Length: 112
Image (cartoon, rainbow, N blue to C red; front, side, top):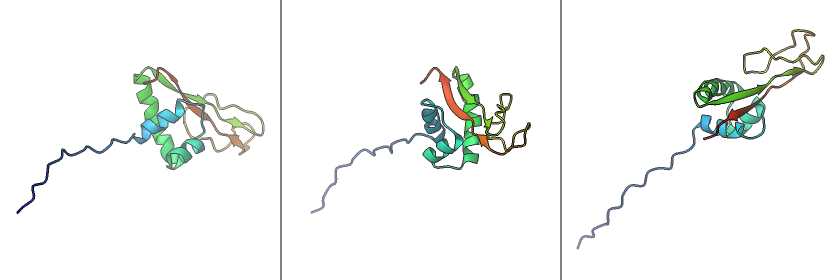
């Protein structure tokens, strides 16, 4: 006698959140540094910069904005207001100091 197994419908695999969605969700909270974002999503800071550049463009189309609180020199207090690059600067253009407080990143605007 042969057994007949009941056929089950295949269960689709749960779709996990993408890396950029996880980064955006993190940025919806308090402002974070590249190092903090990197630690949360477990990728290098260099890779986080690439994702932030893409997020910056896609957020614009969604009516939101990536807010960057600029880096600041720990030695003379120079604030990198006009800097367009997202990564931390290497040294201060005024005093050449290398103690730089990292920029902070967050998302502002409509969520969803």
